[in-house]
Amino acid sequence: MLIDTHCHLDFSVFDTDRSLVIQRAKSAGVFYFINIGATLESSAASCGLADTYPEVYASVGVHPHDANDFDSKAESQLRELAKKNKVIAIGETGLDYYRTLSNPDNQMQAFAKQIQLAKELDLPLVVHSRQAENEVVRILKTFMPVRAVIHCFSGDENFLKECLECGFYISYTCNLTYKKAQNLRQMLQLTPLDRLMLETDAPYLSPEGFRGKRNEPLQIKLLAEEASKIKDISFAELADKTTQNAKLFFGLQ
Image 1 (tube, rainbow, N blue to C red):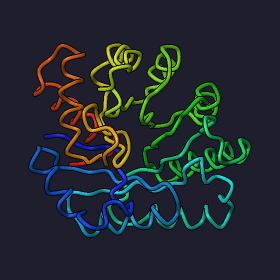
Image 2 (image 1 turned 135 degrees about the vertical axis):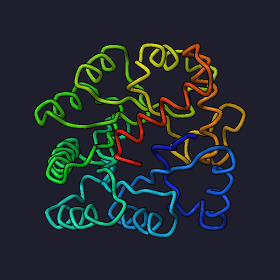
Image 3 (image 1 turned 45 degrees about the vertical axis):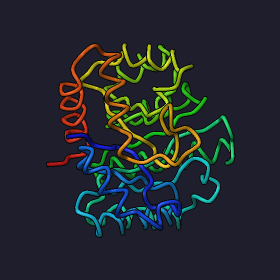
């Protein structure tokens, strides 16, 4: 069994064949899908998918790209969404200083508010961090204890060490398979097996050999195969441990 801990099946690129995409993944051994909200609209859509498909669970949040619009009204709306059936996390939220589509101060404020919401509702947090590692750690530490996963990990060894010391989980995507992703492979080697999770971030980041095409949750099997080679363990052990980690983190049965 495998779990795609971060995908965006609500996106319009899946409108024509969403059910087939889910079925293909199930046939490949993927039995749970955590659909991640990035805006209020996509968070609501994520809740709708969770109601429609037994295998889908929802996370609700506002991505740092949309932090400029995260006011008190948006916060209230997000709180109501977070109380819906099968919502199991807050996010994705965090900081993105690579593209900086929202003002950094607004990003930090929206991030802090969503951390507070996660703690208030006793939900784990899905964290986006891109070229903002020091600030992400600093903000998270001010709210400790926090249950968090660093999604699509792209940091260095120091960031990895700090996250692990805080008790956070580390999630890797299919870009781990890229020919030039040696740094990511080194970070995976340093990530303890009991803190490791896998995701596709579909429709983004298709694995090597499929780049330029829409990513799908079924590709998490290729990611797990690559990760098992890097960790020098069997595919079965890698799949079992990452699945158990995801179940524990998200509270899945």
